[in-house]
Each structure stands twice: as C-alpha cells, then as structure tokens.
Amino acid sequence: GQNGTAQKQFKKFESYKRDNQLPLRVKDMIVWVDTKASTVILPIMGRPVPFHINTIKSVSKSDEGEYTHLRFNFLAPGQGVGRKDDQPFEDPQAHFIRSLTVRSKDTDRLADVAAQITELRKSLSRREQEKKELED
Amino acid sequence: FTTMETFENIYLDLSKQSGKCRFAESGLGWKPSGGGDTFTLDAGQIDGAQWSRASKGHELKILSRNVGVIQLDGFEQEDFDRASKCFRIWYGVNLENREHALRGWNWGKAEFGKAELAFNVQNRPAFEIPYSEISNTNLAGKNEVAVEFNLGAEPTTNGMNGHKEGSTRNRGRKAAAGRDELVEMRFYIPGTVAKKEKTEDADSGAD
Image (cartoon, rainbow over all chains, first blue to last red; front, side):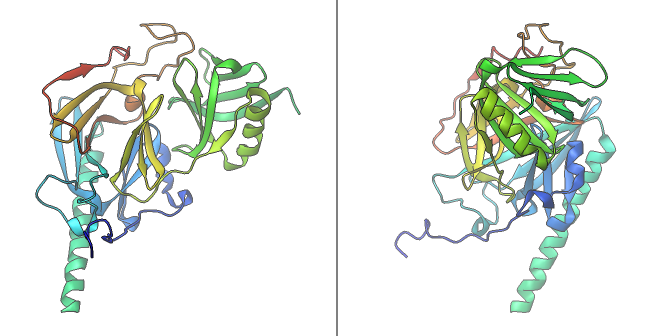
C-alpha cells in the first residue's frame, strides 16, 4: 500500500450490537463482568459502558482504608506492549482511554471481579493459542 | 392534550431513591417517593434534551441554561412519545434520540462540549462526563491527561454548602452515587505536552 497505516484493517471485536443485549444487572450501577460477551461493564455517570476484554491490559487491586481500589489498565499507545494489530495505535487522530479506577467498600465483590477478568483473559488466550496451533 | 404528564419510578441525577417526575407548561418537577425536597426546573431553563439507554432504563437528559446537566433515569421505551410531546409543545425543544456506542472499544475521540466531555466511538458517544463532576485535571505525562472525580463524603442539600438553587443532591458527586465509585480516568491524547502543573476546578463545591 501507499503509507499502509490508514488503510490498516483492525480485528473489529464488538461487545454488543443493541442495548437490549446488556445484562439486567447494569441497573445496579456496579462493575459487572459479562463472560458470555467477553466484556466488562463499567458504570460511568449512570451509563453502563462496555469494555471488551481485548482492550484490557491488566487489572490491579489495592486496599486503602475501608475502600478497595480497582484500576483497569487498557491497551494504549506508548506502553511498549500490546496486541497492536487489534487497535489503531498508528492512527494519529485516535484518543484512548488508558486507565480507569473505581473504589468500593464491597471488597469481596471487587476481588471477585478481578478474578473473573483474569480467568476470562486466560481462557481467551488459551483459545487463541489453540487456533494458532490448528492453523499450523 | 393534557395539562400535566406524570412518570413514576424516575431517578434524578443517579439518586438512590426513585420519585415522581412531572412535566407541565411552566417546567418540570421531581419529588422523591419517600418524601423530601422537590426539585423544580423552569421551562425557560431547558436548552436541549436527549433520550438514551441508561442504567435503570431510559434516560432523559436535560441540558439547562444555568444549572448544568440534569439526568432523569428509569423511563420505559414506550414513554418516549409522551415525553417528546411535552418537550416539543411546552418547551419548544426536540427530544433527540441518542444511541450510545456498545462496541467495547477504548479508542475514539474525546470531545469537549458546552457542559460535558464526551468520549465518542465511531461518531457515537460511549459516555459523557459533566464538567460539574470533575474535581481536577492533570497532564500526567506525555500525551496523557488524568481526570479526577468529585467524591464528596455526603450529598449536600439543595441550596446548602454553596449548591445553587435548582441544584440536586447528587450534582457534583455523580461519580460517587453508586456502590462502585469512579475515582480517576486517564486518557491518551496525542499532541498534549507534559507539564508538572495542576489546575484546580473552583466550581466543584462538593467539599
């Protein structure tokens, strides 16, 4: 191609097509892992905002007093690592959400969210590995 | 056409309790079902209105002239016709049906509107942040902007602690309205220059 980057095709993963596919639990305005859709839903100003598991680089948990903090680190340019073929890292126009931090007094629930995300990422990379092996 | 339209089980600005929402020619009112102060907004304050899917159901978002963004959540999809009629006839405002991005992408475009910051994915907003909810912004590094949210301990009552008349309890603390509170968000925005400088938002009023 000419300069290649602008025409680059990204793997277009999609969490949901319509809002009636959102899980019922979004009404509680809590962080929710929808395993079936490989998606984490974060409540932002009263809106359920999906983030596909492919966008999440890591999740870190820390306890501060009566609150547990959960920080979601997303894949974004300038971090060295990442599945760059999935995302428009070379697009000079693109803005990224780099991280998002929530806190809650529900320590056990947030620990559970972190564990579910780790499990989801593991099973997805296992599946990708299998696919690669089948293609060889 | 009636002189008043009433909707039940509506949440105002992410309130914990639902209430009754009424529209009339003079403006709108919201009354918490468990008792408490009624919130009112004059018709002349209404600049624009949007209809979107939110957490409790459908949301009617009002862009007001002087008191920022007002969010009314908990409407049924079927309420749209009745609500849009109120806005068209009484307030001369088109209730705009605004679909949000559900792709799950973390890239798009941050756009700074009059009252809120919107993050758009393929020309659809993924979410919006009213400026009233931001306590601090900070250039955290090269191409990185950190946005911190108001997490005031307790909601303040109308007219108290510097809250303007016509304000609601959760104005300026929507990030802390749920069990999971939004603390901080960081954006990668190419072209921003790193500076070790903080800008305090004097308008927060939450503390």
